[in-house]
Image 1 (tube, rainbow, N blue to C red):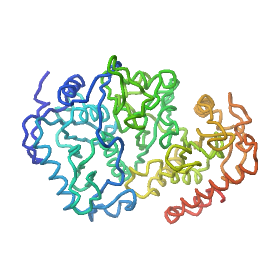
Image 2 (tube, rainbow, N blue to C red; image 1 turned 90 degrees about the vertical axis):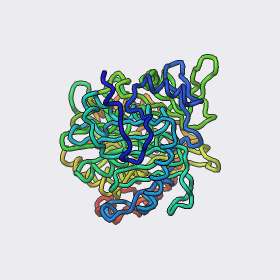
Image 3 (tube, rainbow, N blue to C red; image 1 turned 60 degrees about the vertical axis):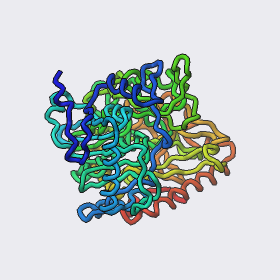
Image 4 (cartoon, rainbow, N blue to C red; image 1 turned 45 degrees about the vertical axis):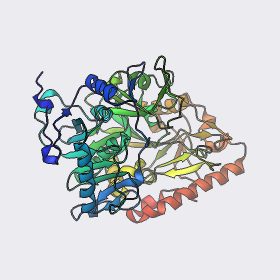
Amino acid sequence: MSTSIHRLDLAPYGITLENVHRNLSHAVLYEHAIRFEPRSSIADSGALCAYSGAKTGRSPQDKRVVKHPASENDVWWGSVNFPMDERGFQVNRERAIDYLNTRERLYVVDGFAGWHPQHRRKIRVICARPYHALFMHIMLIRPTEEELASFGEPDYVIFNAGRFPANRLTEGMTSKTSIDLSFEERQMVILGTEYAGEMKKGVFTIMNYLMPKQGLLSMHCSATADAQQEHSSVLFGLSGTGKTTLSADPKRRLIGDDEHVWGDDGIFNIEGGCYAKAIDLTPENEPDIFHALRFGSVLENVVFDDEGHHVDFHDTSITQNTRGAYPIEFIKNAKVPCVAGHPTDIIFLTCDAFGVLPPVSKLTTEQAVYHFISGYTAKVAGTEMGVTEPSATFSACFGAPFLVWHPAKYAELLAEKMREHKVNVWLINTGWSGGSHGIGARIKLKFTRAIIDAIHAGTLASAPTQPDPVFGIHVVTEVPHVPAEILIPEHTWADKSAFASTARKLAGLFVTNFKKFESGVTAEVQAAGPKA
């Protein structure tokens, strides 16, 4: 095999270091991680165990976007996209490059974002840790030798300086961590964090900007395809709602677990790998994910024993946010290339810890837009200090931290495609029934799976429904293999007055959250929300 394609001159970026490794294999990156990263080890499953240092999750408050005349009118400025000036970006980039020039060796990963050959983007990652290189070698779509040889100039470059901090005196900095993106320079700079997920979500943010400019809908969702046909379905949901678990369906072909684009000829995955939560992972509950975490995968911030390197997936002493990254082809029913036809069904997942949303409801187009922009789920009592009752969480388009345009832009694209392709939209509660958290019980996974199966089989498209008096959604009252008594939430509560007051409370939270989006949607969408 020729090695010339694995050599790269980084001088155009101001990097003069000669010891640069481009697109190393998994095996060689393992070797480098073990040799040069003191804490890296190999689990008994064969996965590389790596550690992200002080930061074990994303730092959304430290994300910055350059405010430039060419793009500033496209960006949804505020609590998601904090502006920075061009000089501040240049200072941080220079700081990152200076740091990278001091390392003994650097790693370059060249790969693609997007499986569709006409819409994919070329991404280059420059970093100092083999763990980061392996992570992005997994998460980007890996070029063939021929594609790597003709890769040329990338569309976007990520300079990952890892733990090297930002200077807090730089204009616009609020901490030693800064994740900066310039659409004009087509570059991203990472300072003060070694959490690998910042690179993955940085690429998604880039695609969230570029795809809508072409009339394509970028989506924070998982997607599966029918085993015989090209028809697909997509599942939206925030962390803890079951998006990854439910997309690992042995009866379906996996398109991807997290990031997709809906284009003119169907959907395609943005990524070449999956990045799953590893907390409490077991071979019984999630066998496909468990067995995918083998040689060629990364386990992040997990704890294992010294004797056998057996991972304890229940140990949260480092972080609750333990993760595993693996190539999508490690899932045996993955559909590679990761493309499929237009969705027949859209599924919104919510873990309603208030226990008042039904296990499954059918939504009108206007209701779908309302709930898409709302992006609701709930935290349960006891997960955070001082939280004694369920807490509502709203994340626009089920992925607010990664949006660039105003949520209405994505919602408009969703509505257009729903109407054009006559897609059914469903709201599924994977949370509580019979009472709020602490009183009721979590809806059994086997019932949620039965609901998903019925959706994919087309059974629910003609199933009987009844309107919910508070939320207005159409509650499905008959689902094969699901007890009828749990389908109407009020019927599962012993205290009917408590149910009514809790439902009104949650409806009020919806209404309050949606006020900030009202100016960007139609009167019909505004009217499709719950009645507080």
